[in-house]
Every structure is written in C-alpha cells, then in structure tokens.
Image (cartoon, rainbow, N blue to C red; front, side):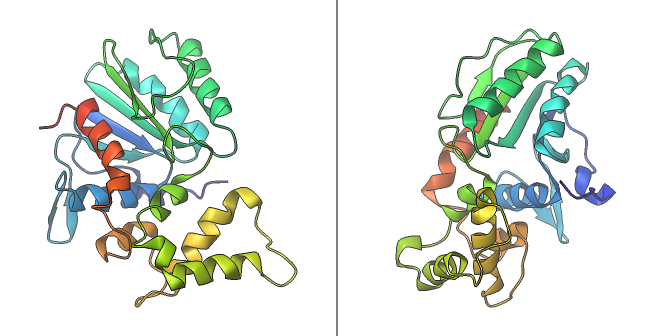
Length: 227
C-alpha cells in the first residue's frame, strides 16, 4: 500500500497545461531531480522550478491510471502517466486500456506499449510509460539501478546484491520488491547513507546522464513538445 502523500509532494506550485502523473512522493522527487540534471527543470534557492510541464504524484499505480480522467480537463493540453509494470506488463497495459474505455475517452492504443514510450494523438496528447522500459516486468527501481555507475564492476553494488540473496532466514519482503531492497541497501552504504531516490540523483550516486535514461527523456520531450 502506498503511503499517504504530503501536500508538498503532490504537485509543483506552478500549474501548467502539460502534466505528468507518477505513483508517489518518492517518484515525484526522483523525476524532479532527474529533470533538473537533464536541464529540463530549473533549481532556484533549493526549489525545483518546472519548465513546460508539471509533475503530480497520485499515490499508487491504480490511482495514476484513474488519473486518466484528467484528460477531460479543458485547460489541459497533454497528459503523461508513468506506472510500474510490476509482475506482468500485459496486465498493466490491459488496465490502462480498460480505464480509457470505461472513461469513454476516445484513444486508440495498441495491443502493447511502444518500446520508446507510447504517445497517442487525440484532443489532448496522451503519453504512457510503463516502468522500467515498456518491454519487461519491473518497477522504477529497476530503471534507477540501470543508472548506477559501472554497475557490473561496482563491488559495492555486487555486495549489496549478495547480501540480499543471503539474508539469514530469507528475506521478509516479496520477490517483486527485491529490486527496491537492493537499491535501498546500496544507497544505505553511500558516503551519506539513507538518501531517498530523488536525492540519489542530485548527489550523483546514480548518473542522470546515463544512456539508459535517454529514451525516457526523449519520450518526455516528444509528449510535451519541448525544444
């Protein structure tokens, strides 16, 4: 269950006609810092300033998908959603298609996501990104783990993986959350332990300029028509 969102985490103060819905406060801060690093957002006096589009944290995956109703808002030009595939990509995609149909929103989406990020034309542009890469099951932590510098040669990353696999008595968390546990363990061993995923970007523990992020950034630019 997603933790309740604080008001400060729900959205940026500036309201813009292009909007990105994400799953929760941690994701909100991760994307905010990622967009700062990639030059798409500004940062002034410690505050992240949206440029061209805003982010809103909706809660859990189902709440993000239900947020598709915002396509009916008159002042909105484009809406993007980012959701985890979790265990089954096909089930997540089916849920999105079903919700669009139930809301009587006239969008024709294919049988599966576009690997480069789906963008569907309509009265309002609709973008869909299914974490980690629109092609495999997983969660945002898989996407972030691809940003870990030189991961295959990173002894600390490999040690964290081994520690997760050899927990006495076995892990208490579900298998689907192993990527989350691995990333959290690795972050706990950094110079400043315990940073959430958003600050992991700003501190440089993961590389915002990693080529693994490029397709996602390109999808954002195409969806919101950024130069």
